[in-house]
Length: 336
Image (tube, rainbow, N blue to C red):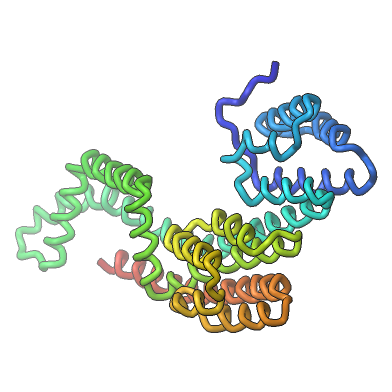
């Protein structure tokens, strides 16, 4: 009997390792069941070991690997499982595993790049918060008695500082509780799909942020759609699977509507033009060229690379604006 971990979580790096190694063994002529036995002997996490054990048990009972993976829909997602299913049905499982590994590697690289870019602004912002805490809780309590004994008229800015600092010193437990409650309420509100949808729509109207969201969405969407179509999946099914991987609910709704109207015989170019605010002219024009030339999947993969580079430049521009703003904020805090 296999014990299920309390918190079942499969990391992106584990999925990449799984796809790469499984593809390599299948190309070497090793059976799927024997290939899974390889993972049992590796130093892997309890969650990953549990998934491998279930896959082995299900394969021994005659189930397909995609049917078994559907038990872990939350951990692997629609795109991963559907590409496995398509690979099994077409006999191109090893190739599709390589596709999945490629997508996951690209996602990992993008995530690591964003984290590395945010380290410096986060360090500066953290320093500002720490400095404020040191002033309010350690420096100010020692200065306050001196200020009270001066018996002189204090400047307005000093009075404001005394009032704010005194309030924080006396009420800090309530402030922390209020802050925690605000975060919890915000998180709970975003768990309501309708509120989350409108929140995502608002984000798409914010300067700079909207471009970053659009580009990051189109990177994943174009790559997933292109790889699915390259695997022989029809455009409607590919759109359905690719749309399910999009995080922004407004984009997901828009693309779902496009997919449904495409079923009714509408042209993809016309549908995209109606939403050109969210799909820029470069995207629409190249999709039109790809559709007419019959090389849509190649165009989509080219667009994924293009938006990846564009996203990288947008993030650099955003951080180049953010860094001086944070530094200025820190200067204002110190000056105050």
